[in-house]
Length: 228
Image (tube, rainbow, N blue to C red; front, top):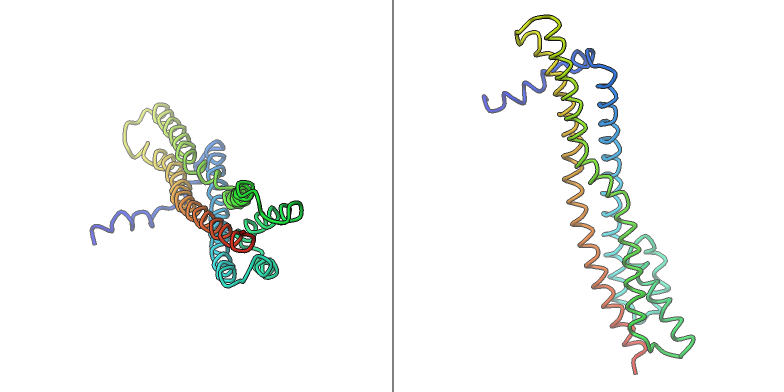
């Protein structure tokens, strides 16, 4: 049980009592850190849902795509899979094919088709990447904001120590412990943000690879449908 002693000690911290002695500057710093943490968790929740829905919708659309006899059949069925990022990639490729068939009667420019598919994929990845920079900012900045609050609190504690003429830890201990709360809250905001930024980054790379694979499948179907 001795190994769990630090965790039990954390549970015994009287936060209201510690915060009651915090200065206005300290409260501002804590409020900024709380804002970073709340907004980061909101982004984490939204991204988790977004990636989960995108993976599920992509899987359903890909199964339908592979069963379809041709591009026209996929186009008719794509509306029911509209949230899937792969549908937007398909739309970009299908629009390019429609332009080429309308002007030349067949698909003659494979490079233009590849570019259209790549642009569609990049656009969807940008949407999925939206707000991830905030997680990176929170992970990198929050510990320094917390450290600033701690430094200010420690300076104030030692100033009070000097004015009281006391050298005991009983006099300076409470002020230092209050100051360290800012560092703890800064880490509380930064650690989840850093973890999920890396996790969602891996999800984004995986999604990009899957859309690249889909683009190749699209090209194969286009060649079968419009090849010589």
